[in-house]
Length: 449
Image (cartoon, rainbow, N blue to C red; front, side, top):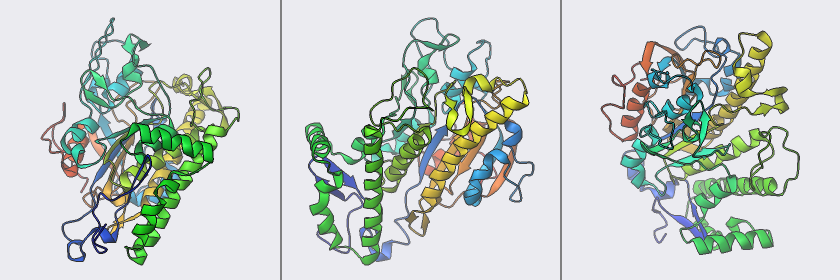
C-alpha cells in the first residue's frame, strides 16, 4: 500500500485472525489501464432447487424479448432485463436409462456433471467432474479459494437415500472427480470465518473467541489497516470501502443474531437440530448464504460457487408461506389443483430469494457496470415436473451478462433434448476455462449473444 495511486488487487485488511479482502477500487488500477486491461473477472454460480417446478406457471408463453413473466417468475420483474429464461434443455443421464427408480438422487448427481450416477448396492459411488470443479481446476488458482460450495440443508455422505442411490448424490451437486463430492457448508458462521479469517487456524480461533467474549466485530481487528488505507485512496474509494465494510458488519450481526436466537424453528425440517449460526428463518438462511457468496465474488476471493437451496428430494415444509405439507410429498401432485397451488407457492418463494440475490448484485458497482454484469448465474432443477420426474425441458434461468457477452432480457426456446451441458461449454469458455465439450454436449449453446 506504499503507492497511494496504485493498490494491489490482492490488498487485504489484516489483524489477529483476520484477512478481509477488498472489492475492486479505483486506486487498484493505474488510470490509463482501467479501460483496457483490467476488466473485472467473470464469475459463475450454480443454484440448485429440488423436486422440479409447476411448469405451467413457470414457462413464459412467448419467446424473445417481449414476453411476460408468469406467476412463479414475477418476483424477477426488477431484474427481468438481466436474465434469460432457457426452455428445452435436458440432462439425459438424469433419466433412468435402465437403472430404475431414484430420480431425485439422479437429478442432483447429474445436474452439473452430465454423468449417470452409479446405482450400487454397496458403498461405491461414481458420478463425474461437475462443471464448477472443471472450471476450478483451470482457473481456481487465480483466487484465494478455487470454489465455494454452499447449502442450507446438511446431509449424509454415505448410506442410501433414494431407491438404492447413495446419499452422496442427493446431498451434493459439486464433484471434484468421479468419486469425490465437494461437501457444502451450511453454517453461515463457518463460511464467514473462512472468507474473513486468515490462514492461521490458531489465530482464527483466538480471534473468534475474543470477539464472542468481548462482543467485538472482526472489523475491530483490522481497524488500523482500514484507517491507513482510507488515507491513501480517493473519495470515491473511501465511500465504496465504507459501504463494503458496513455490509460485512451487517452480515456478521445477522450471524450473531442467529447464534443467540431461541425462536422455534417452524420452517426447519422435522427432527433435525439447527446447527449453531443457522437462522431460524429458512428465507434468512438462504439470503445470508447468498450475501456471503456475493461478497466472495465482489472481493474476488473466488469466481466459482455452487449453492443448493435444498437437497434433492427435500421434504421441508414451508409454514411461513402457508404450506404445511412437505415439498417432496407435494411434488407428487397428481395434477390436483390444491397441490399445484402449493407447489407454485414454494417455487415462488425460491424465486423471491433468487431475485433478492440478483438485485443485490445489480446494486454493487463494478467497472463500468455492476457485479451482476460480470456474473453468470444458473438457477434450476434437475427435474422438470416433480410428478412425472422427467429430465427434459428443465426449468433453467441464466442471469447476469457474463462480462458483456450475454444478450439478456429474453425467453429462449431450444429444440427438444438440447443438452444442458451445451450451456456449460459456453460458460466455461467465457470464464476462461476453455472446453471444446463437456460430457454429452453437442457444441456451445446458441442464441445467447
